[in-house]
Length: 213
Image (cartoon, rainbow, N blue to C red; front, side, top):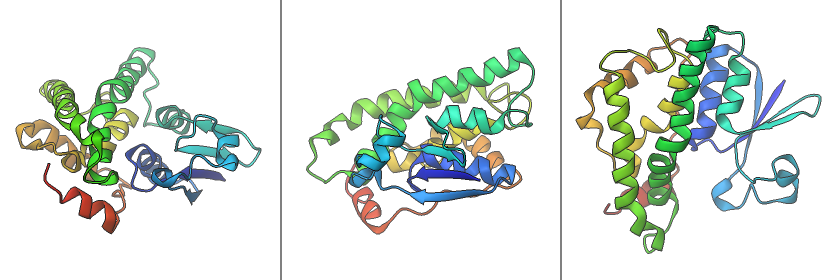
């Protein structure tokens, strides 16, 4: 049994739920509200001193953090991670891209708009975050001119990783209409076997997202 410590509305945590469902793996989900200090407790920090979700824990006590590392471990030996070394490296390159050039802008803009108060000084960062986020979306759009997926010839964990925050980029103020190939790819991901959507936002986050950009 795999125990997942995660926040349901987090894209990094949703990645794991999506892959676990698509793999048909049995798991237990423990909700951790990282936006309200749930990752700063002594109990949680004993599992992940970095104080972030997601974290998985196995029955033997082993613990693994970092969403994309967990995706790789879960997908090892399955069709969701290429077996060819070169193709695997290509998939991993997109997963590194997601964490370094995509998530820090698209996900952070979403967090600021949905989980910080209207007068938060962090909202001054939104224009810069959107500029960099659009750069990442443009890179994805170019790739999809010649390919259907980011993991190789078929859907895999690089697509899972990128889907998590791209599909809800509008929450951060990103208009995906300028990226039609990205839109088509999002639609393809939603038709993959075992797909499950991210849980709905709570009322508080919805109210904050309704504020002017």
